[in-house]
Amino acid sequence: MQAAALGALGATDAGLARAASFLPAARSALGAGVDAHPYGMPSAHEKRVVRRYLPWMNATTESSVSFTPLAALEGIITPNGLHFARHHAGAPDIAPCAHRLLIHGLVRRELVFTLEDLRRFPIVSRFHFLECAGNGALQWRGPQSNAVQFTHGMISCCQWTGVRLGDVLRHCGLKDGAQWLLCESADGAGYARSLPLARAMDDCLLAFAQNGEALRPEQGYPLRLLVPGCEGAASIKWLARIEVGDAPWMTREETARYSDLLPSGKARLFTLEQQVNSVITHPSPENPLRGKGAQQISGLAWSGRGRIRAVDVSFDGGVSWREAALEEPVLPKCLTRFRLPFDWDGKEMLIQSRAMDETGEVQPTYAQNIATKGETGIYHNNSITTWQVARSGEATHVRLD
Image 1 (spheres, rainbow, N blue to C red):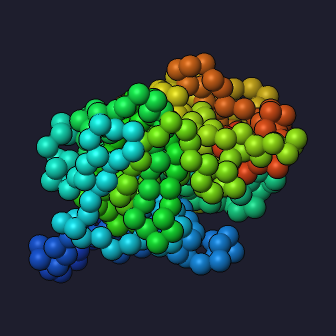
Image 2: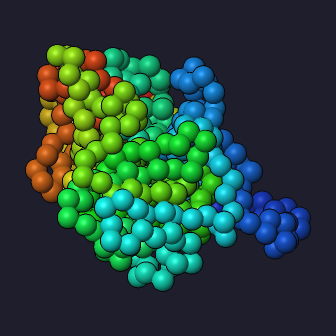
């Protein structure tokens, strides 16, 4: 049935002849030269593929977030200009030649590094997603924004290049009792977060490039910390200072913010790891179905614990499931693209995706999440998302517990 449906998509000989008649007109115009855009730009026909923000979320744009248009992208890599941005005091303008990184505290040598100093350490490149702890927060108490861009757009995935934080810390020499780091930004907010030393010595990077070019200003140019698999707030941008200590600093951004408030009134602190998650990007509110017949489910899955092992797709709101194919590469702490062809008969559907990672963790329903996290928290929402596809092909976000 799938092959027959695809066969109907082919063009007739008459259609090909008609298409050929347009070629001379298209070839008659002289296009833009190689000097038109010294830095390449997307086609003008893609002008709607941009980051967007919700004015009602925050008081100012300097302390807000812009969302990645996930539904408009393919593969797993987010173009630098579309990577979501989260600011607390706007993006500072820092000249790389003037930037310095101070490492002090419980170290044998307190040192100040220039960017050139850091480049003397072994340079590595790795693919990782970066996700805000608040990704999905808009949906915690019910659907509020009918778009993948706003339900899940606080996640992006890039190839990050830099040096291992562990190599730099070992160069400074760690004293007995060293257990935590305080990582501080050079932004106007003096944004700072505590990070367990064990986590820092694992796979953290001092990154100066993404997707082959220097970091964008909104991504921490000229230097940022990258903590793979953990909430984005731990990956300090415009990194200027690291203090080594024996306990967490309990800053505002890890107590009053970025902590998981429980129904008891207590809060779980330092829940850094991003749990297994997924979302269908086609069909979706931005990508409705355009007719019966051959279609393809497509979406993204990820986990802060490692690789994605499997993704299941449901067409009936979780009553039954079919396994989707994972598109290579499948990398640890990285977005994974999944796909599942199907034939649509024009009937209504409730489509969902459910991911499992290599540790065996399975993406939960809303009911399962609320049972463990309560309804008061807004961070780390990895609940299964449901799109209701109408007979018209339009998709709407609905919540199924």
